[in-house]
Amino acid sequence: MFEFIQQGGVVMYILLAASVLALTIIFERAWSLRRSVVIPLKDVQAVEAAVRASDVDKAMQLCRENNTAMSRILRVALANRGVRRSIMKEIIEETGRQEVAHLDRFIGVLGVIAAISPLLGLLGTVIGMIEVFQQISLVGVGKADVLAGGISKALNTTAAGLSVAIPAMVAYRYFEARVDGFVIEIEQHALRFVELLKGERG
Image (cartoon, rainbow, N blue to C red; front, top):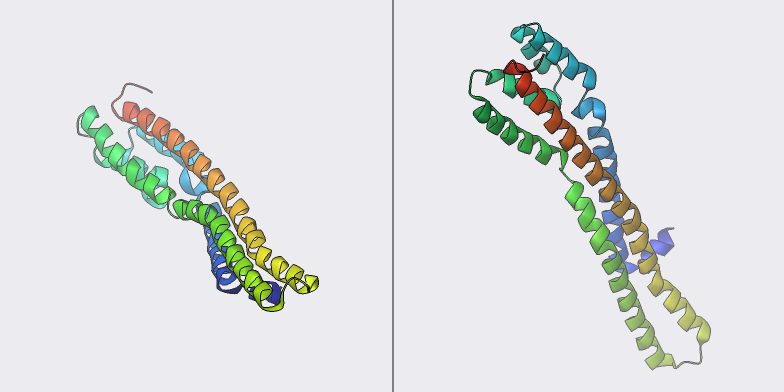
């Protein structure tokens, strides 16, 4: 394995660093984008039940105890319950944008890694092929085994680039879709909570 990496030269080390970064982001986002961390339905229902019972203090306490994206948005709504509906919606939307930015954190980096890894692999292959042709100019084309070995080494970086890019792209699309799904749910819960605070739904 070390020999495989060493044969790819500087580009292979860059790809290795990109793969480590991609794996770190994948594990971090998988942990941070769990439903229990973003929208714990039981906690949301408990806050709504407290508001229905006109126990705002209990609702605020529940929001403080559960430091999740949804609870932070509900806490802002509760703190601004005295303002007009239109203003409250604007405040919630602003808070929601901040939470979405937090959910989106690092996902863009995965997209960049997925995009540049094949290009880096191709760059490594081109550099390797240049070295092969330089070798041909020195020893001629008579030594097929030397040329085949050189071409094989040159292609290592392309294989490595694709190996990094494919999982990174899959993870990028998955996390992007997961965040989009959470955003829709957060909007639904937030709008329902506004109507609940304003007494139009029980």
